[in-house]
Image (cartoon, rainbow, N blue to C red; front, side):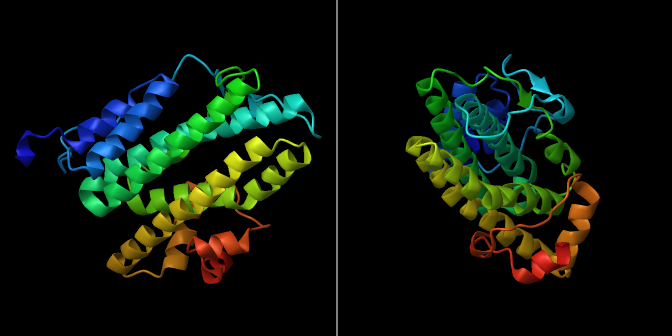
Length: 266
């Protein structure tokens, strides 16, 4: 009987409160599998944590205290870039879990399915980059990391529309803009293994942004508001950075970010 099943909210919360990176990635993929297989009840009997559990390493620093990675194509610079990307994917696991657990009761099973799928993808991305760091003689946690990434979750915890506007439609969409240049940098350094990992990630991120734009469009329809204008308003209220060109227009269009929406934001 469904009532006897563990709840999806409890499973999500447990994954978010798993500190060890490898264990968090495995727990997240298990939650996504269990949900897809019908082994978790659509019930929200526990609250999501204000902050997810974090390992002792990496040391988390404010953005203005992060060491410079340096310019050029040095091996250390590339290693630092892989570490930074690995940390982004690690935090992205919890961002997707939190979306499913915090707003799933309000938005329904399809929303939960989409964001648990995103969380499983982010866990896989993290694992690929962590494995690449080990292959290059380093490991996740060997360098400091940016402590500002979870701010977007705190800032938008009250409103699912704000969460969608900022996390998939700004933060993940920015990855579509910058990752092709990053891939080219690794290709130029003859590191085709890392380049292939990043290409896999950017291909998946197009789908993640599309989930965001699709669910955001449904919300706008329900609220009777034009999507471009509401997106512009929410980003202005809840995103601390700037959104400016150059944009990866083709990838953004594939993800459902229309020229009309980008024009509204610009």
